[in-house]
Image 1 (tube, helix red, strand yellow):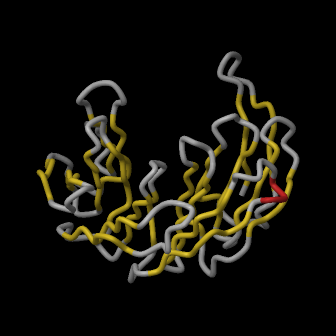
Image 2: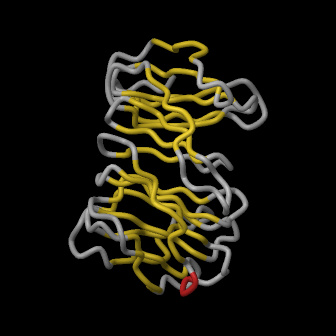
Length: 219
């Protein structure tokens, strides 16, 4: 139920943050300028912290289930939260301060816990309902679901976008699938893991994808 800030130079723990009421911390994200830290937990709320001082600033309320994943867009203008309440919430960070953060929209459509959320311009979510959803983006958007990607045989709990703009989804079905976000069509399936795929990351400057699984090897 704590968060620790570490120095990569010395390996020293600089600060320990508490405040999730004895609930497991399940998700972290930070603003691109390093000023704000966001944490989610089984407590249903998102805590906002001053990343430099470790001071608690406020809690963002609205979810009715635990917060499973958080992401901040590369532009730093939106925070996205995925929850066990089957929804995604998009929060505005455009005001520049914790006090001015507000929920822009709530995205509904998944039939299970939402386990992963993209940090790219396009809002993309993954759920244990075995689907990936692509949502309408932008400040004037309605939050409409544009595409539902189906093909996994179990819940989807990891997302990444490669340098060519193709989407990668990791699943409890032991596979990683590659998709075209534009068309919603499946491209290929990567199979090698012997257990659930829990993490997927794409290299920003080469055609390389790294996956992590319950089977212990990193592929």
